[in-house]
Image (cartoon, rainbow, N blue to C red; front, side, top):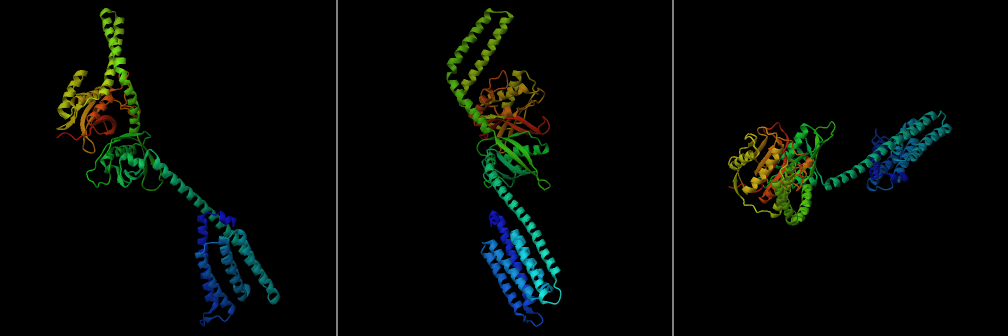
Length: 554
């Protein structure tokens, strides 16, 4: 009983199912015995031997009763099994004696209850059943020694007894091993279900997005974080990334990784997207662009067909916004006192430097005064930028034809830096018109071009300005150079105030450019794109992108 209580629920169900099979087999054997011993097949009447007929009828009724009880009342397994085996042994022994003992050949029927006991019962009970059957055969043979003139088959009875014990031992050990394996499988199944439940909780609550897709880019599943980052309103499954134009950057990054697997992360931008029809199956983001850091992993599916890959997505825009808010808070406190505490002493230093320059003409003095003057100009420019941030000048938006505006800007920029006209390449803007404050757009583009000329090779076409459109058809303006791209580490802090990688920069140029774009209902960002232009083969490259959120002017 202790061993029965130690079994799992799955193992107990298996034993009850095996017991039902045992009872069905008993019914079949009882019916065969009833036809063979209970009826006279030649005359078609009941056998004249009342022992055989009554015993077979009673055994068939008992077999049916055992089957009903085992199916309806799943309790007291050992007791039910013991009663059934005892009935089998009693009936077979009675038929064995009535048929003439060992010479009848019915001794083989003992294997049925003994095999059932070996499989379903503990070893001790199975061996006890085998010993009862073996002792009965030996006693019956010994009894024949006294009542019969012929020599009884003692050797045959002993061989039957040995076979019974061997059968019980082998079947019991095999059944115990199978039951142990089933117990182990049940335990592993329980552990697997628990692990799956834990995985579902972790995947559902983890902040990173997880997307599972095949080699063709068809999404099979995704966790809530992935659906939130991509802007999906339903379960993330059953569609290809290329089905939605908004997810094209993710699809391109995945295709590039498939072509050349690498552990390096990819950075993409998911922009707001409105589907063309209200019943579109795949929907994208509608609020703000999301900067995603993508990492890829291949799922080892062995020899099975259909590869699987996992995309781990991290929304880095939230980290960027948090860092920017912290710096803005500190800058706001600084701006309040900058005008009086810094600007006035700075003017005094500049005036004193100019006076000293009139009296001192030696080379060493001139060099030192120039150092002071340059640093005064730098600090003054920083102060002006900070004050401009606090003013938040209101834009005067008006329709700006891009073709004429960009041509004029190119001429002015090349003249300021002494560049050849073919260094800056302008894309065909056609009749594209955007609504923007011309002075603000001029300042933003001039800032971006100043950064570009610092890193470009100054070869023909090394600086590029070209209009484009996003997935939703809204106009964009791209500024790109052939210099080394911005690393992801720098990209994370690119638009933060006071962050700069140049010893001569103030760290406010790009921040001011983004703020001016926001004031004009536009968005400035640095995006990693897959370039198919004349600047080289298809590869991931970075560029500054101005997205005009407002529709273009009529």
